[in-house]
Image 1 (cartoon, rainbow over the protein chains, first blue to last red):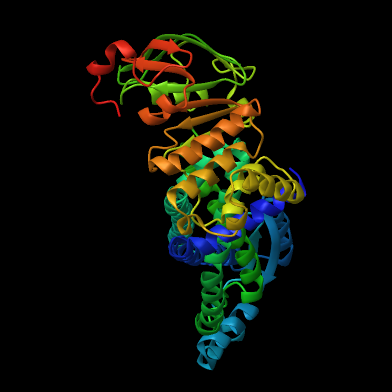
Image 2 (spheres, each protein chain N blue to C red; image 1 turned 30 degrees about the vertical axis):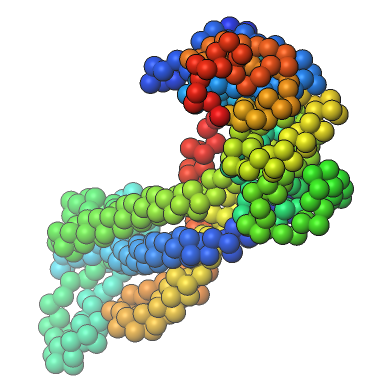
Length: 295
Length: 237
């Protein structure tokens, strides 16, 4: 393909969008609506993924040591706990330390349990290298001597994991479905612009244009339609996400979790949506072309 | 040179539009294709520029074997042909010069080659002063001249015209015929399907008559209707 041809294709594709003003507007609006939905859904999925990872990583196995266990026995126990596969980190927290935590959370009235009155056990806190292994780690720790109990939040954690998983999976499935809808929508709208130019295609074929020569301007037109259609939803998503981050993010912060920072989310999301929109535009156009290129 | 050997065209609905046709046209000939509506003329014309593929038989045109050729060779065949239609098929949003240049643009010619060829061919059809007009600013005859200019701008070996005077008054039709005759005089084969009795009779050339999907007459310098059955075809104009 020489430069004159490339220039002609580019000019043709721009001219065509200009000439088919209202058709192009319809296609661009179609892209805009779909990309907005895909964008929102992706932002939700990405944030749910991050939150669920935060929650998962936050799950630790708390191993309570039996009262009257000697320091030597505790050292042995610590070594045994370290040997459990998938244990990433092990932290010792004395019962005095545990009480301090409770006092800081629930108030100074708990100070009365200080010293010898402290009913709390000494604790080993285990962090798993793979959050899914939490349950196994707890079960193995439970069997060791001098362990009174090993807890990980039990069934509630399990429930949380499965809820998070299904939110993520459904979100992704929804996004993929939306992308299919977008391809369908764009290919249908571009089919209308192609229909309005069927004489042009017929003439191109008659005077000996190759199939790719005929296809290129339409594929480019599809890509530009995607590009133009993506502008408004991107602005809406960027502004919307920033303000949601400021609002919801602050509330979440009190519970120790956070949404993805706008600057970390917006650019990758913008670029991916831009590429996706241009690709589905081009792909939609290519699908619509097939029928018109049959001899 | 164009050769059809035992060509049959059957459509998917079972209709046999052409039955076992054999026809040879030498380079530089002028051939009228006549026959009533539904006789098979349009099918024959479409087979020539490979809009259709024959069900049986062989067609060679300008050294291309139409039954054997691959899909991607079709554009190469069409670059050796110029096709003209009754309804002109001009692009309304392009100027006259752009419509003509388009035929060269899509086969990758440079701007300067296009400009030269377009002005030369516009002069040939007598439309040099209309280059920047749009088709809807022209008369029917002028539009057909633009369509012919587009068909010949690539210097084709063969021009196929399907009812080129079908929408035109007698005087304008004569102008179009004069242009086609000039093109033919330069050695280009011209195949013209027509219902226009006056033209065929006044400008005698080889006449191939099609009826019920078969060639029933092939006569050098013939009339629109065969002298013997002049009275039997009152519907022919």
